[in-house]
Length: 87
Image 1 (cartoon, one colour):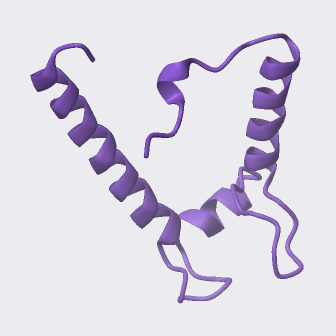
Image 2: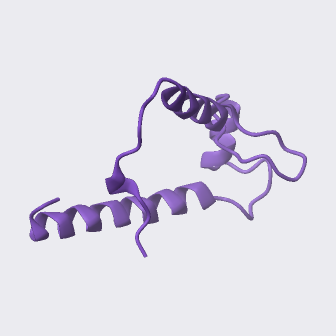
């Protein structure tokens, strides 16, 4: 990240990953509960990443990810200052 050209390339890659990830997570939002889309397939595999809302429980995958991160913090892992929000 010290080399400006590489930093720009890495930033562009992460921006594209964020864009594609957002599209995938929104896949079929308006299609209804029984539609074939990423969220419903994940639910069927018991790997849901849904947030708790509208009477729906938090997805198992999301719950497990939060638990893993919480355990890392409990074990003393410190977040790098490089991840601090910038204004």
